[in-house]
Image (cartoon, rainbow over the protein chains, first blue to last red):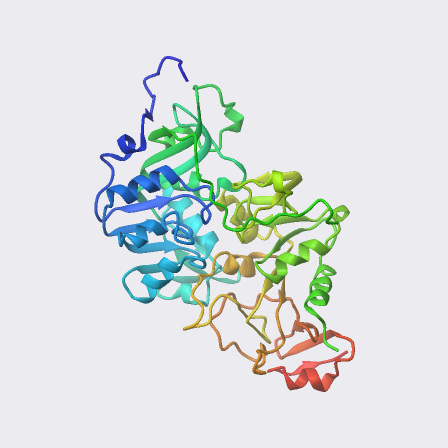
Length: 242
Length: 210
């Protein structure tokens, strides 16, 4: 961490500074994580504190159980949510039913692939998932390989906020276990990506073969060693169990 | 007598072949994992990015970043791998998952599945249900045979919103095992003591028996 900073050093001292000029009303915000697991906690806290309004949030769950991105809902900062699952998120269900937040539900694989397409410069894709369902309403359909398929468009955002286990100062990142989820995809599909890393290492410390997210997708890095790591369902077994 | 919940879970586990890749849905399907022998070489896929899901952790093993799709803490077995959500759903949508076991609300005679929403009652979103139903090579549905007020859940045509077209291979209920045939359902196994008439009385489509 004390090596001379190369020209591509992207490290910011705080999330306040990293996000300072990036937040504005009406922006499209991608946020990684699965439920509350693997979310960019410090970045979400800072967005909540700065409180830009009329946000479109692109996230699998948009928080859960009143925490994570649900804080943005509680502060009435969200205009629309693009997601796959709202179960366990009473704030979102309530504002959706009240008609104050628009919710666009996607099959989870379609959600992931739309983000991937957005980052990969694709104009969209056909998939049989959702064919014949409410997801297909208003979408172009075509029979391909004998299967009814629907056309899905790419997703992009102004800003992605993600968390990784380890990052170097160029932004090469490695994730931990199922903490990876949508985060590396979102980094590719946003105009600016801010990454908070549990651990910050020198360039070269992560073996090239172990990089999950190449650094070119990351614009700003903040070292955030402590996370709350809220567990939604702490399920365990006991030693006496079979 | 009809099967208990535990009987249904054991019967579902009998559908899992050694050495296959299996995805278990949230709820009762998750419990099928407890009935699969570790030596069978089955790898459980969890759509949030884990192939090789193990049992719940011991207390000191709990990792907040190692969860299943139901957001429960789990473990990874030797040989497990982790990946991002696009890779995970490429496995599912690309036909690389041999078997998915999901809960159901209604199954139609043509194999159509409804399991993600009840209009006006249930607001959760589909999560990975549509991907799994459409993409898994074989789909097994675990559900009750009829609603609490006796309304059939094996039906001629769905009354609830569709999850995926013609996707269900087999349904296990408390009354037996049923395969959609297009025209109706073929009962391939009856729970002990359950008569053909008892099944016909609570099924919303023709049922054939061997």
